Length: 264
Image 1: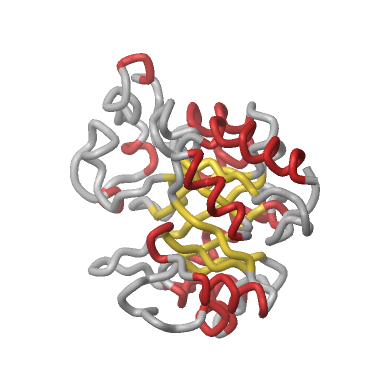
Image 2: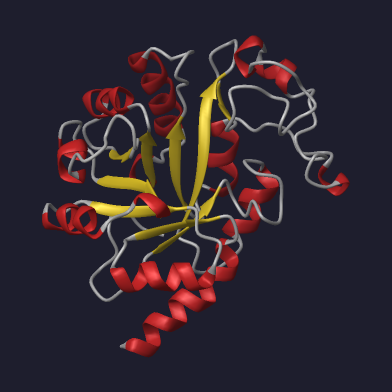
């Protein structure tokens, strides 16, 4: 696996990105889900969500609160990493995953970073916003410590965080997630270029042809989430999207990669 580039080469299939790992078959955002993804040839990248613990460690967790995916309760920000590690982050999915814990970003990069590229989505909640420079610097510190700068995409719905990442580390590849309310009718190129982003990420139902055309005209990659249907994924591949995020990325790989070989 070489340096990460935002768009596949012309004629190549879109990147297949494991959304929170293989989260259809293992608990999301756990080492088990990421290991499953890293073992599948043809999965290009894992996607994960990060936020900060009470002691300002970068942890991998989607929700602001713990109760949906762990035995903990309340905001993750209330707990230190040591306290968070007491919670079971797998039994909610299946009892066989009872030993899974909330991982730190550092742990994930050490375990699978050499096998797959990593899309790090930085979470900052509407009513509990993180200070952009602070969280950006903490994430970058872990990425650099693990020597992963050339193998990560850092993205966020909070575009001020993306701008901060670029300010602190201009070499970092970044992405903006589309917010249908605040970004409505704005061109993807406008949204991306004002914070120096290379990738535009949106939901399947949000993507319009004019958006795809505009992004590509300006050299910006387009990734779409979350596609678990082979039919939908093939349709988006035909439309020319550059990356497809899926909860069952392992199921899409043989279809998407074979389909491209057959058409060449």
